[in-house]
Amino acid sequence: MNKPRTFAIVGGGLAGFTAYATLRHGGLEPDEIAVFGTDSDPAAAWRRRAASIRQRRMRSESDGHCYPTSFPGLAVREAMRRRTPAPLVQTIFDWYNPTVDDFLEHVAALRERSGWDASFVHARVNRVRSVEGGFDLAGHGVFRHVLLAPGHPGLALPPELAEDGRIVHAYEPHDYADHVAVVGAGMAAATEWVNALAAGSSVVSVRRREPERRPLNVPREVFTRRGLAAFHARTPAERGALLRSWLGPSYPPGRNWDEPIEQAAGAGRFRVAAEVDGAEQIVCATGFLRGYQHDPLLARLVAENGLETVDGWIVLAPDSTVPALTDADRTLAVAGVPGQLAFPAADTLAGAKYAGRRFLNRVRRWRTR
Image (cartoon, rainbow, N blue to C red; front, side, top):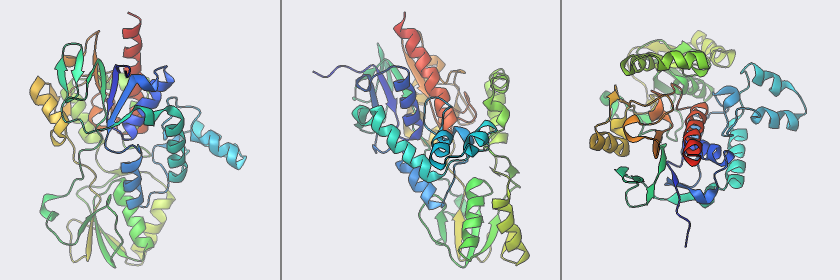
């Protein structure tokens, strides 16, 4: 008879995978953990999106990997391969951005040695129900400690463009027409400006506001203990307002972006506009739908348990747990993009580590009671 599992991760993407690697590093065995997902490749969804926008390097700098500890990361492997300390020096200052190919090789290697496939259960969990002894995962078993990592709930499209036959989302496979309008002003949009220009297109950047230029999608200070403590000291409503201001469009500074855009603008091939005009193709670099209400699993969880929410986020404790459903004997935690009220950069790999480590801490305390 198979040994009953106590721990579950709902979500087989990179957030769930990084949390899984953290639990394994903390001493849990593969036969103790069930991972529920629809694709056993944890990088499958991310790989498709990165390929669609022709992404070549990670934005998340030195912590852009799935190892449970921040150091050593991918910089060590590259330094050894290239026989140069340059990547290590860069990582000290958070200047190191691994390539997408190196990142995907790292995911494949970690998947093989972590036991991921032994823990993976090919199933979609549509409901998490509070029961005696833990949580019933829609007939897939009862687990005492559960981490929800459902990922992004879907691609966002401007309603006024949804029926336009010229439209394609940046995160879907596409080529470029001669005259392209790119809607959006964040990282995906900036990538698409450069991609379309490199393909020989003329580009109109359609944006509602000017993007900020920063290396990460939230201010760097919220990655520090002091900055995060200040964030947690605010009310849920104040945290939600801060998140809304931080999650506006942004992309990194640097000549890799600026030079091709400046050259194209000088040649009349790049301009900024407030509306889509006579473009042959509209590329929507508008990211993902935001809010628990777009995810059926989370929406049902909120409705059935009357959970507190703010502006589309479930209110979480600083350790990423759902307060109303977590106590000394059981845990319900949230990782990935729905966990941003606990960690503003929850949708990054560093954010997945944050949730995974705190989930592991709760497991350890429960085991030593």
